[in-house]
Image (cartoon, rainbow, N blue to C red; front, side, top):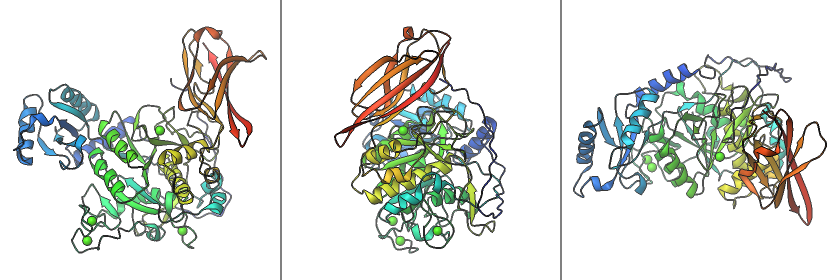
Length: 546
Ligand SMILES: [Ca+2]
Ligand SMILES: [Ca+2]
Ligand SMILES: [Ca+2]
Ligand SMILES: [Ca+2]
């Protein structure tokens, strides 16, 4: 169901002192055409842009890497015009990714790539196939006038820091298409250091498969990241700073987590992301933060996410800035927290993605953060978009794990999600806005009761005569749902349920209960036992039956 969105234009006035910064970029939320142009360029840069997993029976034990690649090339050439084939991952890498090949079809347009994948999936001996999705960063650069980290006030960082400012034992892997400037003056003290590695000796001292990987790895250039072009690292540097720029050091800004460690991993597409997840797992990261995305099914991303989830990591991703509820990866993968962004008025921003795939939101308009140092002469520049919102949640996850190291990733996910501040937004963007203090003040328990109906959303129209799924969360021991015709006073019972629902179907609203042409209010009330006392939380949405 699509929500009708009324755009609100907002005049922003910052009250604190001003320092003018100019960001030399004209990129706004992308038009479809811009997106296709950017993607086409990206696919050209790494033309092996389809991944195919072949059944093991297709090969013999004697087959070497070379002969496998040759066999696959010849096999496909019968059906599809293919330029080259290479083994995408080492065979030892993972059982499910064994015999996965990266294929260059000479095609760079997303829709055409998807068509080729469909064709490949139908071929016998093909276990799995997908586009090697190119990721685009999800920031909306702007021309800000004021230095301001006003978001800390909105998410109650200061109160949260009274409980914990962050531990250097919590490592946040920042995955970014452009990478992080590790040497930035306000990041350097929080950059993760691989203790087992001796820098610059050309030897893989810790034997993890990566030579001189001191701070992480650049999976695009396949080096330790020291050689990537600094000019391109603005996006990851800003994202990293929002999560974990060093706090209380009398320099620059502070991340939500003041002392968490930043592991910098550069990934441009699905194929690069898969080993980067494994790197994060093997080298002790707790959180994977991803401020980028792509549209369209992506079975390989799902696999990588599942592996990292099974290893206990929490993944947090930007929901996208295209004002859509279309499927978006990695944010819509199961087990990934999808983060929308709010503007300075706590309203769902006109650009932010929305819908039941979104878990929660965080501020994302003009957030001041670290910026590539020494390129444009400025070290701190604001950033906007879901790219800015997601690292705030990652920083808060870092604080939470600093205070309660025994929590599972599911617990951290749910504590953040259900301690959010409910906000009255035009578009549905999850449970509410990040509240770092409420999360830290949870005693490490998922806050209850918590009630929210996410679909239908406030202001939605539902078709007369059709059953409607009520989707949302009822966190507690029991819940009830009632409805009322707006011009009447009586509430009618729709459902009384024991137990709880997290992000799922609350009940079905029967088509025959509601009259056509009327507004109705739906009310969800959740009860929970709080030290022997029953407390409730409720949420209402108004819908029109048409
Ligand atoms: Ca190494
Ligand atoms: Ca070394
Ligand atoms: Ca600082
Ligand atoms: Ca999710």
